[in-house]
Image (tube, rainbow, N blue to C red; front, side, top):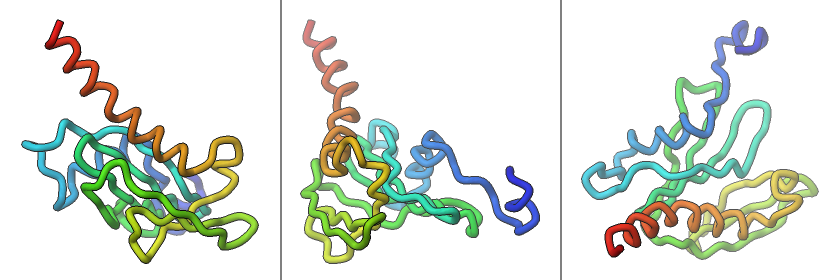
Amino acid sequence: MSVANLLLGRRDFCSENEIVEQIRRSKNYRNDLEEGPGYGLLIFDTSNQNTWLVCSPKRLYVILDDIRRPEPRVQWTTKQIPPKVGMDSKSERTGTVYLNERPRGWLYSKRIFATIPIEDQIQNLVQRNKKPAVQAEKAEIS
């Protein structure tokens, strides 16, 4: 923990693994239906908050990790995977990503996606999460 955060009573940002685990606490998470948390994708970061997408086999979650709050919170979830992705530019540094035609979008940091566009990264996140289930299916067939 940084000295500044300690003095201000703030915590450090959570790691990707901690963020992925956070979906288990979501009211939408059903342990009997989900195959476990999948992978996370950091889409926005500032000195006070990070926004993550986390994909499980059944849902896509948006999680806000604000160090001024006690813990990260699931802000939104959808069962529609892969999501429809729309984008809008807000400034030189940020844009807005819209998931499944939801009118309110989520900010993203353009520098995070300087080499691979955000829409490709979201599709990669979804595909990456599906691979273990597909591989397990193939193993059962063999």
